[in-house]
Length: 227
Image (tube, rainbow, N blue to C red; front, side, top):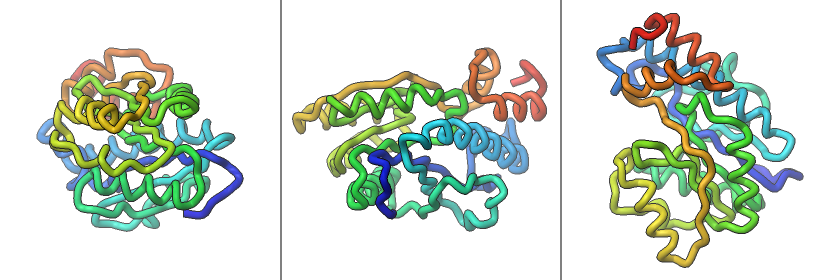
């Protein structure tokens, strides 16, 4: 990661859109080809949202998967620097990305998932702004996790919590650990990440100003209201 004139790093965390490896909890509702199409629509929405912040943040895509990101160069905007995720657990990989950012000289970093097509740029801007006072900013999800973590230094303990990654205790476990370390914590807007058929149904029922590519994909794959 190379330091630039910008002081903030926006890091998107994602698998590559390989149908056999992504969103397996949506099987059997969606087959591998449909899951790949959905993942591509997630990317389209996430990239569009992130690009609205490139005036203040440098953009990174940290990827994992059995393929290579070069195979998806038609999907990934040139504004994104590509980095492979490193580490065994999700926590290890996020910590490595945070360390990369701060070692490169960034003052604030936000790590964001890509399966939240309805997320608004203002929610990420707010997270960066909150870091003026807070040490840790989370973007909550209704299932007890978080879609965003914002930091102004790497804090290893936040990524080594007792709750399993992907479980409903991740957000509270992270907040408890942060407060135990004396960190000031804040939260930005809450969004539902799209992991289950129920999540897809809720997304289609809600009318978000963002997430157009995902909405179009789901309506094409399933039909409006068919989830």
